[in-house]
Length: 343
Image (cartoon, rainbow, N blue to C red):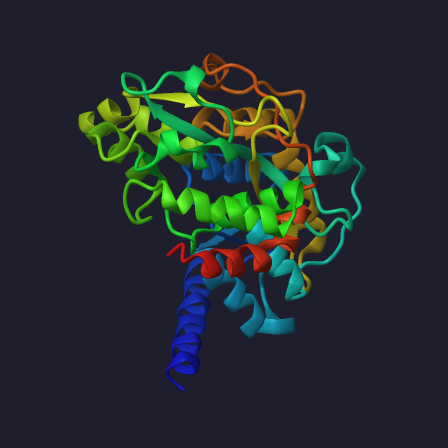
């Protein structure tokens, strides 16, 4: 009963946010539910409005909250676009029937097939690599190789990562399931857990800070966090990021695990045409350059170069699997984490 009441109150609060932000007008609109919270996104929404005259109304919350909201609203939902982070979450929304398929030559041209759902249910906006951040003085890059190699005895008590509840780690394990099968993936999860410097906890930023403070020597983190930390207003955060090197694992086999932020047109979108136009706009070279430069993510559009900082880290071979497979293997990854005792 308490859960139902809380979801009801949550829905009322969101409804109030829309009613307060939308004044009576004949202007065309597109309503966006987004998990992303970056300045670059708002810059692009403003640019889209300036170019098209279509007002972008934004509701921000966690992915789970937005998915719950869409389920509660059903056919009456005002949402046109759902934007969230990680293929696992996109798949979660897909499994609940919250997207509708769209066909767009623009999106097919701007976004490679591996970054979009095969049925046109969602499309990648940016991608990030799950890299190894190592302490520059205590670890040499020559001693690193792959995610799998972190289970070797030399890394005992030296590895840092966040909890198994985190979708980034769930998708990483899902990629290992795809590469090696569930049995080998379980061996890897158990081996990595045995080599951890501490119980898994905290954010990706916290893992970098823990490497800098000496709690561990190598951390599994998303690449864009390093860029954000290097530009942080807190000197201590910048100092921590400066102490780690960037290593792209699995360059001798399948490539480094990558994941995306992505968008899809909601199932009951009242402004479907405007929703498609917005997602197409976000896939264009100009918009992709903004996302690449401001938030240190890799552009999905192959005609756009990463930021200078990311280029300074060098090029890397990325895992080429269709990212839909990460979502399809998410539940098995969660089961494996539970079975090995990864908190």
